[in-house]
Image (tube, rainbow, N blue to C red; front, side):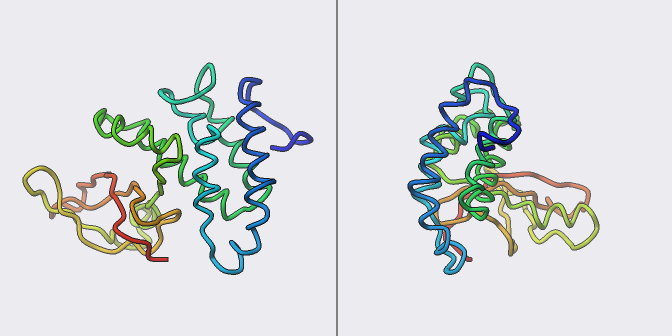
Length: 195
């Protein structure tokens, strides 16, 4: 949040939030009209927020703070939103992707991906629109997985995955096998941008 607003972060988050606000002012705000009118994807600014520490604030193994703070992460997204709400949503997606990795029991996956997500070197997304609707009975699961040697082969279409570009990773849930009650959450790498 800006200096006039309510803030929940500790004082050790102030340097990160100041760097984020400076990047918003210098780099993101000048692009905001192009982002909104032309669908421009400000990947350099988004990666820069990771370099500033914004995506690591809530992640135990990567936070620059004395302790991970979800509140500080929320404040960073709010600071980005002061310059561009679309970019703030992409930052939230990056944070959510890091949070999925924070909470996985798959330590090898966390070690392989989370540092890149936290630093912005690897962009992340959340592909839970369809799974949340499917779990609520609004629509069927769009992805189905079949067990193969070494893992799963997943087929289907996800029409809404925010902050997705070529080489980005995203988390989603698919129906596993024939049992409609069996669901698996996984991380995937995008082969290309669809929208």
